[in-house]
Image 1 (cartoon, protein in one colour):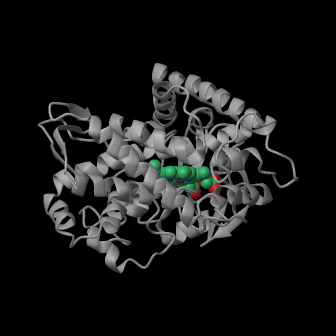
Image 2: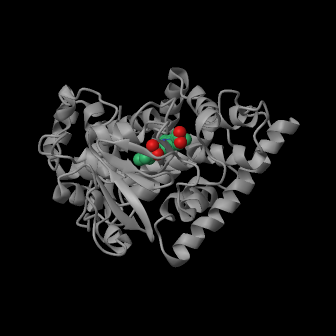
Image 3: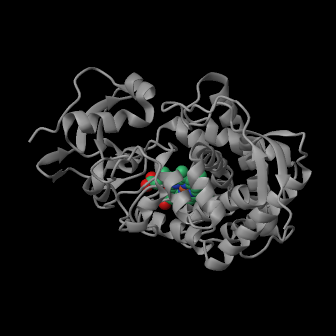
Length: 413
Ligand code: HEM
């Protein structure tokens, strides 16, 4: 059977224009959770829906090696990182990541995040005006480095580098190149620390990423090359700083849905469900990418070896077949969510250990919970007139004003 196919030579421009909604628009118009299009001059299959997500995470059917475009590897991912591995090598590397995500370690991170919010807010004066996006970068970077055991030599410079790594992949011109420059600077910084750990000149906490990754042995029993260990330490620091995007969206939701904020203040709403709804509702990554491992047939459709395949992350979170009134912000929907690993997938789906689902999903949820609790219960602030609109095509997306807060006061405890 022929797969529904989008006519025309190339649809990259439409993808850039329609952004997060590109795949879902076509899933709706084809009335199909699988269709073929052409992106970057190549045939691409787009998958969505629960069944589509389940198929995408079948490691007998799809691989990651060679799937990500160069501009992503050179900025966001880094070379040799877990995102680009398959099979035994991936399982081994993923275990390394999941080994630091223990309950104990997550509690430590909570405390560090809370301490940094405290420290930052003590410095804010009622007369100050802060941009929440930028303020969160510093809070998150300090906490992330403390958690990972990374000594922060030049806080401002290193925080900027992290920010460039996640802002650059879809950027054009100078901003994109800035991301590449920041990646080589950040990798050099962390590689040197890995070498110091190995030579005994640096003794970071033993549970943190710097120590654990420096001494991790890959599937062949070898230590990772220092540059690869550095790429993986950055796979902890960078995305923790990127949670700033969700913190800004959480603050936007508190502002735009004041009845939800009141419920949280009164204690009859759940911060956990609020955070889940922020992750479902607002855009972050539109899709994730893999390649067909070997020819196979699914529901009568042919998948040819090597074909680029996209899974519709944003679309599944907004799919009317999976969510009632998906375009309403309604945290209470999570009261009766069945915890399927394939419908709510802002950070990927499937199994953490076997597949490529985000290693930092629990970290993200906890950091957001601590931050939302701080915004709701420990701070008072005004949201002045500003441009809070956000685009559905720029990636990552963000309210244009980056969330300005004024009249900030800490609630005395
Ligand atoms: C800021 C919010 C975050 C979002 C939206 C996000 C999203 C994602 C997505 C979409 C993937 C790819 C899933 C796939 O391809 O199947 C991923 C993978 C990954 N994420 Fe996150 N992530 C976030 C935060 C974090 C944090 C805080 C960490 C670490 C502390 C982290 C570490 C990773 C790693 C290591 C992978 C690669 C996993 C693998 O390839 O097996 N992420 N993330």
